[in-house]
Amino acid sequence: MLHCLKSTSRTVHHYHEQQNKTNVISDEAACTSLTVWRKSLVFGCSGFTAIASDGSLAYRVDNYTCRPDQIVLMDGSGNPIFTICSPKKLRLVPNYWHVYEGEVGKNMKNSSKKPVFCARKNMKLMGMTKPNVLAYVYCGMSDVRKCTYVVEGSYRHRSCKILDESRRVVGEIKKKEGGGRGGVCFGVEVFELVVRPGLECRDAMAVVILLDQMLS
Image (cartoon, rainbow, N blue to C red):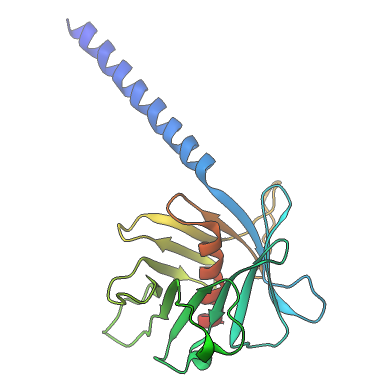
């Protein structure tokens, strides 16, 4: 009887190990990894270039000025996805950035578009805020008291996590390391963006641009 119980226990333990391994593999397969280069492919421009795992151009940002009031995130073909407007452009509440669908143009006053989400930089006042939090992202403008995503970590060191309302990690910004023995670190200009289920890739890229505007 004791031998039978031990055997059953080993079988159950082995089953759970196999299930955990399967879940890890399944989670990794569901992730999307982008290599992000903090540089535009257009000569004389600043911006971003995001490369998919198959080597194709996934996203791009081409800024013709150093600190633009508006930044347009485009897909690999140059089609506008989001327009990110800085507080300077909005002239509204300080430290808030608005993100609009598509391209809104220079004259915001005549635009009827509403932001799809907005973001607020965490002002690190002594004893009044969470020091590990970098930014809060809100869906639309309906309720700025309830955030959709929280970004924690250090953008300067390219070590950030994007968490949803349940504190589940749905995205990560990590240092990019090359293959081979010892690994080659690319510094802070080239990094990896890992997008997990619960966050769209284009939204994750918008978060990267927001962090760069807020903290660089």
